[in-house]
Image (tube, rainbow, N blue to C red; front, side):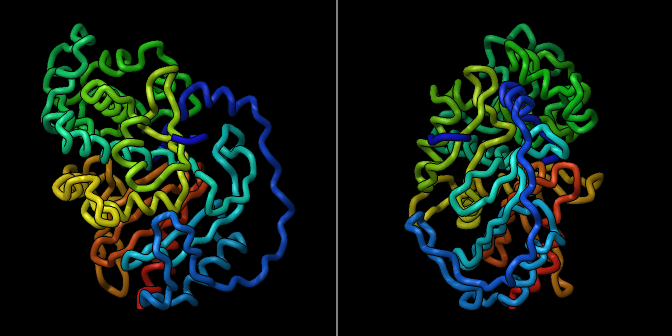
Length: 392
């Protein structure tokens, strides 16, 4: 693990909130008319990616050039990175200036000129990393199955196992259907009663979560609950004896050749699983490609193909939401359209526009980072207007 180092919205660990409140927000540089963009294939850097040109994989570079010019000319604002992998090759990456996450206006911090080697806050994309780590823990026999009851691991909190809480399983945490009373989608991030703030500040965060009453029978009702993902991280720690950051280094990021990243912590000892891993967009694409290749990276089996299939299929339909259709194991499911054809995808969703979008049928990964924290991220518009039509 190296230096540094949520779907809508999540919250930073409290120590980082305090730090951000005390930091001065950087100023925007004066806008200048950008030079017209010329496309060049990504550089091959020895990080595991084979590169190629857009034309070599059958993509129209004129549309992608138009996309870059739109971002440079502020038609789409606070898009920090766009990365495309097609047919197993990295064919496009561009980085732009914008604001790091902070607690200033629009949740903006200092202005950063992002580049290939700048780790970015992934917010809730982190949840999909934790989902993969649960699958790896099952593959290695640390966890028996997704149907294990969570209180079989949290034995020290047996006094909180009341009513139907004994029916809560790992599967329910993976699908956001635990039934705990929670307000993450109903209260502003800045409000003191926001459950994630209280959880992060608690001297015993797990006691705060597990002490919550049930408002629905486990497995019956979807409600977004980031603390449930932190509980999954603790289950990995309890079952394997390895803290989530160390477990990820041994079984996921290390085997993928990812070194420039950092997890955050809650308090002193708990690794934050619900959000805020800082990581490079090129490495986000590696994670997506690992799933596209059914858990294999360059001939190295990292996750079982069965876990990839199970975690990226629909477990919970979400007709009440406008931006996705369903939910897997901490993955979102969405159908895009291009030239009259529906294209299924599964993706991570991080607050502000952090996405890893996997188009299995197109053999393509698209990665975004950004800082659209109070406005609608333009990522889907970009996919529909430029990236999918560029497929010739």
